[in-house]
Amino acid sequence: MNIIITGGAGFIGSHVVRLFVEKYPQYKIFNVDKLTYAGNLANLKDIENKPNYTFVKADICDFDTIYALMQREHIDGIIHLAAESHVDRSIKDPFTFARTNVMGTLSMLQAAKLYWESLPEGYEGKRFYHISTDEVYGALELTHPEGLHSDISAHEVYGDEFFTEDRKYQPHSPYSASKASSDHFVRAFHDTYGMPTIVTNCSNNYGPYQFPEKLIPLFINNIRHRRPLPVYGKGENVRDWLYVVDHARAIDTIFHKGAIAETYNIGGFNEWKNIDIVKVLINTTDRLLGRKEGEDMDLITYVTDRAGHDLRYAIDSRKLKRELGWEPSLQFEEGIEITVRWYLENQAWMDNVTSGDYQRYYDEMYKDR
Ligand code: NAD
Ligand code: TYD
Image 1 (spheres, rainbow, N blue to C red):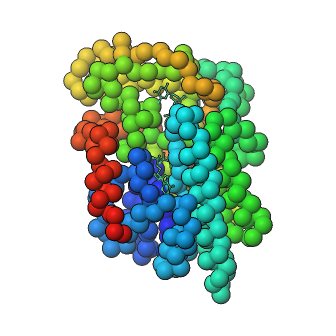
Image 2 (tube, rainbow, N blue to C red):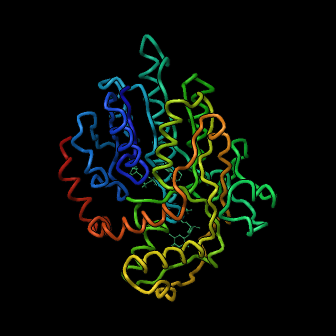
Image 3 (cartoon, protein in one colour):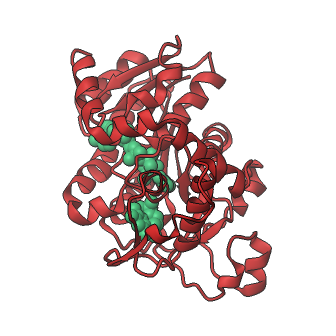
């Protein structure tokens, strides 16, 4: 297959590109990325010279470029991850989110439609796979905090609600509203034109190469430098965390085996209150830096809550396990240890993405491509 992966220079996209390039030498993988502040080709240094990998610097909103690429490279599959992804930025600048997440997705869909419909075989053997988030479902109550961090059976005992695939969309932030809108467009292209689409909604990811504006890498870096850790509100909000490589594995499984027009939720039944995660991060980072475990607890600084802050996300991913056999491979404790170690050992990467220089460097390097 010839596959476009959009947003491949970002956090999750880089793990998906790496997995596909290494696992499928017979495929041609085209990483289409605009290289915004969140895109960084250093995330793919280890695979950039592989013969089945090509980087294409392009904006997904640029229909003509995407359409020409599809024609030229005979693209059969699209795995669409490119997006503006940070809730706090969406609160400050919703227009950018509507442009990239809604109009950009529409541009990808329309390019795929026109190209695939022009082929003798039409949509046969083609696939448009859209990566979305659990945040489109809105927020859940937290009725039984005792049931956190555990598997579904504990939640069944306590009777807490989960996001299932048939849950009503109820996005609250400009980010989740833009992702919800893009999900609707993808499903509309299936229902209206018969395009073979799949949508997945995943919980919060963590792991190497995440831009340090998100909770986990930001806090690891701040602990290292003994800077304050800005915990929003009381730190009571709950997120359901999945190791990024497990998300990439799920994407691989679903891209190859998922049923057309289906939705799959992806998550690891791993709910944590923010404040508890922060304590784990402090203990782990202190230990790995040779400090006394917990000595940096006084960096915790409670700050004004995020506007419209969703209380709890929790994914029910039993359909994915039942139908396609996917399960997370890593326990959270293992994943966090690997993640903290990675950020501490890759301080040069961290300094690079926080300096702003890397963006200018790569713009210069790829300006003629
Ligand atoms: P990210 O912000 O780390 O990366 C986004 C990538 O998209 C960057 O490389 C950026 O340069 C690129 N991009 C942005 N606008 C573009 C445009 N107009 N044209 C081309 N490329 C553009 O994001 P991420 O955390 O890796 O998330 C990837 C996808 O997964 C997103 O669609 C997001 O909604 C979804 N998702 C993320 C999480 C999470 O926890 N991070 C969870 C569930 C779903
Ligand atoms: P984030 O990593 O931004 O992911 P999302 O908003 O998509 O869930 O935030 C994770 C949780 O951590 C969320 O409840 C907001 C909270 N948070 C803080 O308390 N302080 C921070 O500085 C950040 C970035 C997030």
